[in-house]
Length: 107
Image (cartoon, rainbow, N blue to C red):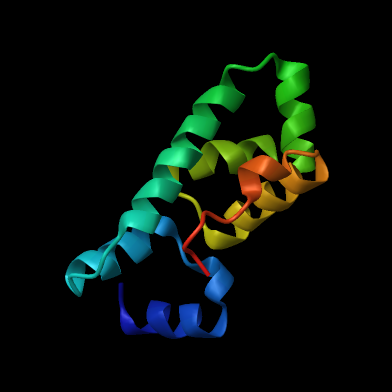
């Protein structure tokens, strides 16, 4: 990550990607458990969504406010915070609040 990218992320924090957060945590020897858990959950969710019939998958992606190509790119390139937020809001709107609750101990 170069200096210009870091300055851009400071101005627009929603552009951070999980991969970048993982690299920073590794570099500064910080705990990256939350990042690894998020990546694991998103990978599981991606596999599940990919296995859905096309109609259901498209309906769910519309709830997430993600285009199919954006979803495929996120699987391939990594998830940005703004897309994770869209998925979270889509889950809340569709009534899956149990999956979006904050774990105990995180504030």
